[in-house]
Figure 1: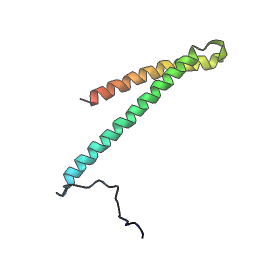
Figure 2: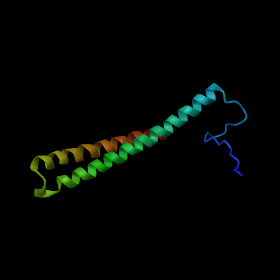
Figure 3: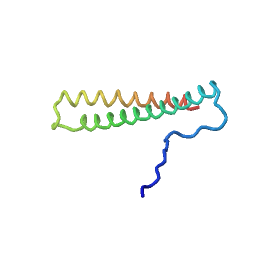
Figure 4: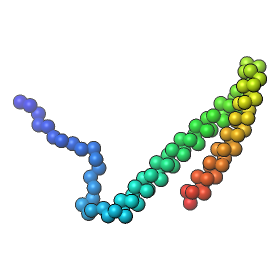
Length: 95
């Protein structure tokens, strides 16, 4: 005999009350803000990693070409400042 099959959905069930358009807009805006925060967090992490690697190369000595070390030093300085600016923006908007 064969096993019984059932249709299963991966969509979360909605409440029994119909969602109004304004409620839907507010929910979608909240979701968009949450995703934007995740995206900005990923950007901040990537920028922090760039600053760290750039600093390592800048301090790497003769193993790295002079031009590459100078470029890495400028990139480390600029990226560090940009990460601080992004932190300030995120802190201001999280209130």
